[in-house]
Length: 62
Image (cartoon, rainbow, N blue to C red; front, side):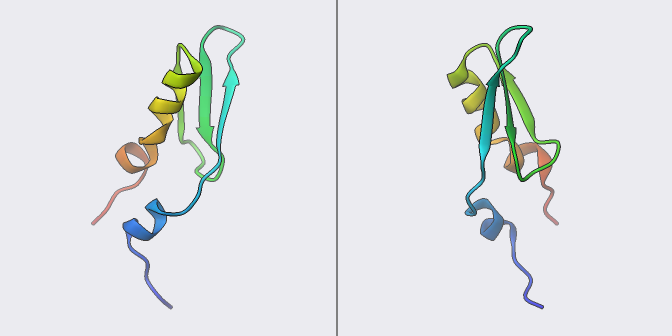
């Protein structure tokens, strides 16, 4: 079995879904990464907030 490092996973394409939140602002998530979510007052802010999220919050390296 070949072990892949974090750089491999960072280069994979991911689907970002952004929806208007009925309570205001926008809600964003990365479809393939359960629990990887962000919010923003605007569409652009939600996109900016989700863009670096998996690498900053969701994955730990050893």
